[in-house]
Length: 89
Image (cartoon, rainbow, N blue to C red; front, side, top):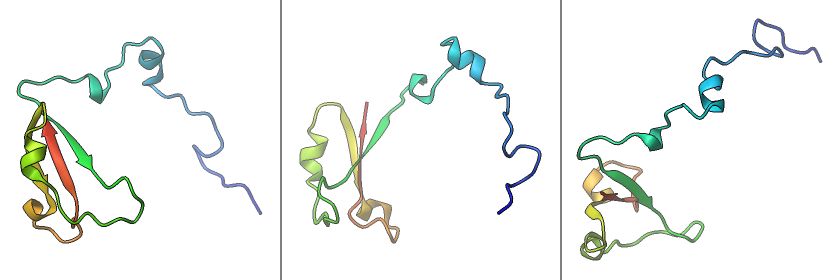
C-alpha cells in the first residue's frame, strides 16, 4: 500500500493562529460578550436511547436565569422530536 502524496499530506504545516494561542492572546467564542446576548442549553435525557415524552416548560421557565424554553413542538421540524432548549442569560 502506497502512502498518500500531495502538497500537505505527511508534511508539517505552519499554522498562523498558533502564536497568539500560545501567548494567551487568542479570542475564543466563549470569550465573546455582546449586548443582550443569551446562551442556549440543549437538555437531553441522561439515559441512553430514552425517549423524552414531555417537558415541563413552566417549571423550566421558573428556573434562575432562564429566559425562555423551546421544545421540538416549537421548532415544527421533522427529526427534532424530544429536543428541548433553554435560553439563559
